[in-house]
Length: 249
Image (cartoon, rainbow, N blue to C red; front, side, top):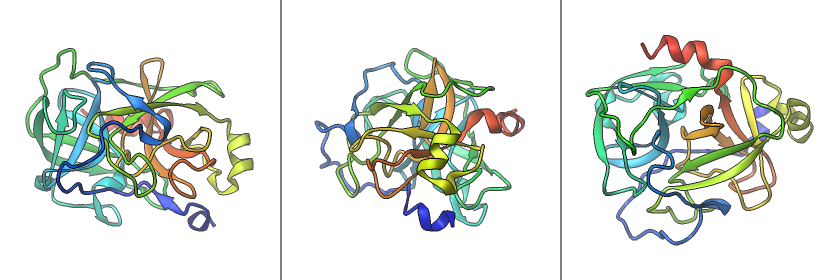
C-alpha cells in the first residue's frame, strides 16, 4: 500500500527561536543568493515558518495542501497564515503579507493532489527579489536537472537554516520511479531522484521545483527519511495546471 511505502511525509514545522545553524547545507544543498529565487516564499502559521511556496501572481501563492489542512481537505483559518517574500534570510529583509483565503484541492488525499492556492490580503509589489514564476504546462524531459529550494531541515530532525538553500535533483521517468517505488504509480506525481544525503526535508513542503525558469513541482513527501536514496515526491504542475489557473484568477 502507498501508506506503507511512504514512511516520511514532508511535515510542516514550527520554529522556536533563532539559534539555528546557518552555515550548514540543506541535505546536500547550498546557500542561495539574493534574487536567485524571487518566487520563493516562506509560509508562516502564527508567525512561524512551516512550509515553502511559490508566487504565481501578485495576489496568489501555490503551496502544498498538507501545509494548511487541519483534517481532510478542511484548512485551518486563513487568518492564522501569512507569507514572507523578498529575502533569502528567513527572518529579515523581506515583506510579510497576510493570507485572506485558502483553496485546497478537492481530491487531496493519500499524498496525491497535494496542492493549495492562497489568496493574499494585499497584492505583492514586484521587484528583483519578488516575482511570479510561470507554470509548466507540459511534461519535462526524463533526467532533466531540476532545482529545488527552501528553508527545510538540513537532515532528518536536523537544524533549520537561516539562509535559503537549494539543490539540483534529477527528474525520473515514470518507469524508473515505479521500479524503485512501485506504489508511486500515478502520473500526477513528479519523482525527483538524488544521491544519498541530498533532497528535500521537513519545512520544504509546498516549495518549488523548477526547470528552465518554470514551476514544475510542489514539494510533497520523502520516502524513508530525508536524504535517503529514494526519489522525493512532488505534485506535478503540468498535470494540475488547469486546476491551479482556475483557482488563481
